[in-house]
Image (cartoon, rainbow over all chains, first blue to last red; front, side):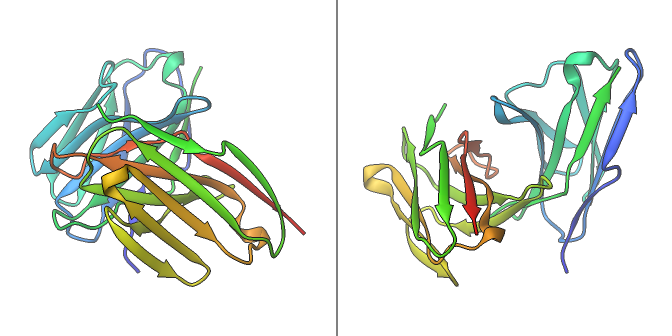
Length: 112
Length: 110
């Protein structure tokens, strides 16, 4: 069964910490995406990547960076975590062919 | 960017009933997807349907791209259909980047 795997289901970090969220897909997909989901605001795109070492800003990139050193792995980095980054983070991947997204199960991050 | 509106925002159904969810969008699209988010937060892709009609079991979807809307039909609803249904659309920007609607929250009661 094809999968997108996010490294942690729940995560609690302290303000100011550097946080890494990892996402791995086994479908050889070219495109990978990071979204955050907040009540009342829906899903918002943070960053996406269309190839190894390539990245593009989404709608809310401030306070985040990403890394894609290998095709199957896309990491989201919170350089200095803040309480307003408490959220559900969702990773997705898709092929360059016209098909849909496959999502991971999400990481619920709490910054205290 | 493209605006996406979903209706209704909330829906309560008796088990066995049918329903129609609507997604309106503001511009031409080359990517339209329907998702179901279950109560545990997992998003499942139901359809990739930038145009035309598709069916999968009790679910079907129709997109009329020229009129900028898509419909998701749920027939003979079951309690496991509960959750939030999202429509996501993408334009000509490439890389299959999409914008999500705010969702329809469905509750199916026994």
